[in-house]
Image (tube, rainbow, N blue to C red; front, side, top):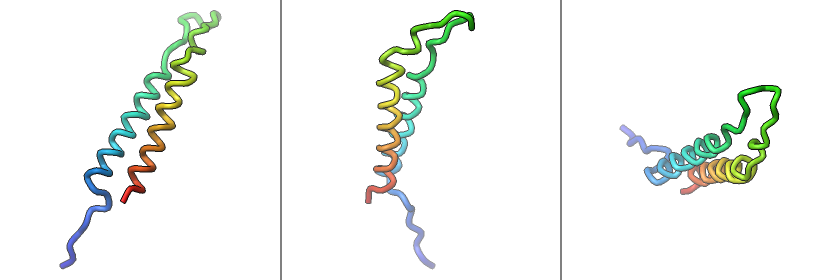
Length: 72
């Protein structure tokens, strides 16, 4: 009977888990900034955290995920 080899090694799975956590952290950083009253505009939605840091975490997480899948 043929031996079944896993498609991804342990290192790859760890890299994929880290990338998933980076994407989740980026989405968490992007939340908030709204106001309680829908008629009042809140400038908090334009913070550096939501416009720069969170998208970098998300894009970095996807890039790391691609690397984790492709690494031999």
